[in-house]
Image (cartoon, rainbow, N blue to C red; front, side, top):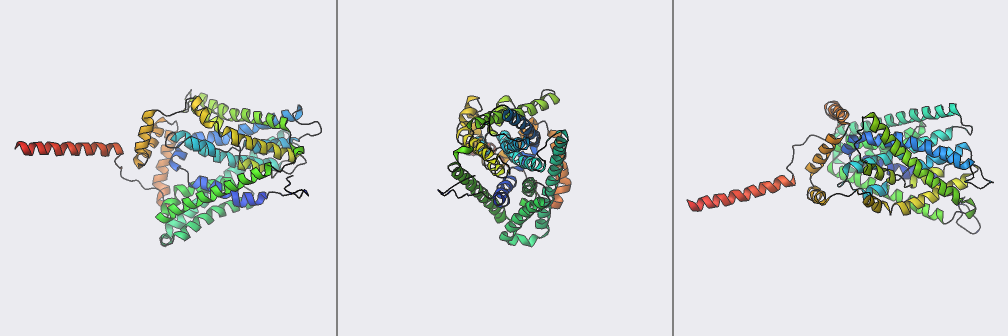
Length: 455
């Protein structure tokens, strides 16, 4: 329990307000503003870590939490139930990769940046689905309950994704079939916001995952609806969603800091906190390295990410933030005090410490671009052709080329004519091409001047 006054008046955080008004803008902005080309190109890695990796992390962390609970990590007068341990595992599975993608810049590491960003958002959504699935299971947990958990998880996940795609396509076709709406940017922006929020509310009312639905809805709108909007609405929606998302994140972290100074000392178990921090690092390692090794051997020792990239993926997933803190406040248990303080301590410790050593870690393992790459990206950063070249280079390096080509073929022939999307543009000259053209023009002028004088 949290106390802010001397007379021990309790102040309780409204999780309903968080999950209906604070978290949706954060997740929707993540889906709406992502680079869809890189997301779909690297979807194999994103889904590997976001789905399979998150589930492996949950299983590992849950088993370690049960082991620690049974072997003296907590005080003798405090014992967690199996349900408490699994709920804590769900909470600590939710990562916060905002700090990681601020260090791993898109213009320097486009592939790794898109993987971290996509995996981070999917991880949060999957963690929330797992949390609500475990919540629905009783205190007694056996083999049957385990199968029920897996089935419920897959069912909720598939339906939530389907709802997100449906609402995103509905918004896209509404904007495309009502061209007069382009004359009113405020109405376009309102329609995008309301359709995204409607997708979230409908999914929640039907007892599915609103977070997964609104993220997929944002991705779908980004790929189709955004290109049907007017220029003002394209700029306005991206700016508005970024402002809302950053404001929501700032509010959550402000509350987290206030709560840390007001929690009573009797709820803290520092031994259990340290043990769970180590368990979380082990679980993150299992999720990244086991899933990577699985695909590596399935694809005959080809994966596409080297050890340095995998290590950065592992380390960036150690940071816990707003989603983990909001989830733990939803736990209703006799031991909720120690669950809240453990999550809060890990969130603060990873945010303050791991975020600041992320840059030294990347330098230690040698994840730095060369001087030639720095010059190249500085010269080419503002060019659309540079993005196309980077995208094409990733296509050539990726193991998902066949799948991606099939998806592009279906998208171009059948989906974009109906729902809208980015049109094929004539290839523009790169900065290098223009420099060569200027040199050729100067040489031609000198040559003509020389011929004229000779004649």
